[in-house]
Image 1 (cartoon, helix red, strand yellow):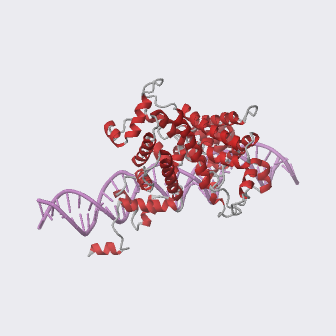
Image 2 (image 1 turned 90 degrees about the vertical axis):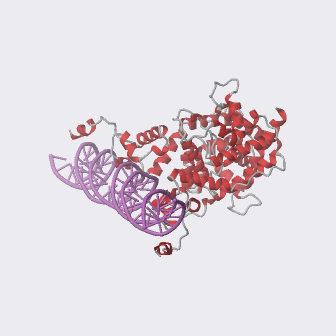
Length: 231
Length: 231
DNA sequence: CTTGACGGGTGTACGCCGTACACCTACCGT
DNA sequence: ACGGTAGGTGTACGGCGTACACCCGTCAAG
């Protein structure tokens, strides 16, 4: 009876991580991410603020969860065609998602910086994108450049997805072990290995961001120059 | 006497907007923009928090001021050479500034979204960049495309600098009158006019973001394809 | 020399935020 | 019948931005 009384309050279906995340995304869609507080998510769900913490660890983890929801909305690759149109389709799908959730780039970027590595869902997206290039015949080197060139167009943001300052942080206790990393994100791993062993770079120095930036800049400027001659 | 007593506290030079802004930038440089509060800026200056409000209207206006400081650090264009290397040099200078202040893209982007138009300093930067392309022989149309293509590479962020939703907001009382706009940002204005009167667009519809996005995406993919053949 | 306005620093207080912690209770497996 | 547990509650704390009243040098006008 008391059960019914509680439920009767608003005939509210039981809370769940999924419901919390959906409510948060909906609230962010209208009013932006600044108008998102634990308190008003709770209110939208007809629940007291602290109830949310039974389903998400804290606000940052909630933001990570929201990112998962968003990445889910990107169409999976339809690899029945050439790399170019596969990439094109996928990027346009990502863009449609971003247009539905204009707050997404800022959140993804800020969470990536705070965690020093993107959310697993974002990792998976990047990994599959690398896979498409690889399958299209790109060398590891060229794929590496390609990812930098695409940069913000892949997700609407962020030149520097993998901070060079990823080292210099206390070792995360629940970080993924390398073997699981390799299994789950084979293409990212392949790329990372190749880059790490690049001849003229100190071990662990990673990629030369300056070089990559100029590479992408010049590719773009060359493309514009060609158009200038044409028109 | 009491004057001396007050000053003697830390022999503090009088506050000023410039000093406040510098302190804020310094604090953001170490610890990121999340570790920036009116309270700790004040503390860094040896002053009570409310004192800051005599020099900046509020925190948002302070962020705008910080952006001004940053944009100042970008080298002015050295237009003694061709458009391509002028643009290249300027973009690399902007990048150096962004590397010094990793929090900058997020702040610039969020303030741009909040104001519906970039900070005047950012406007000036974009205007001068457009000017360089124009001087290099780019048609208005092509410059327009070029700005979209460069997108995040111009400032490290933001496809959509000018929100399509710039209309649909109550008219800002202290918005710049069009004639002043035209005088101060001639190239932006020229571009805006051209885009607004584009044949197949309804008046005020602005540019077709979807088209621009695909244009830039294809330019990039074509560039990559060319490289794929080469390597 | 007096006075009064004013620019710049102060102090207090309010409402919002994230969240730690103690609690209460309905349910379920033993 | 009973103890554990999962899920919702209530209270409280420290930090945030900032409104508002205040206070005191400085300096120009009378």
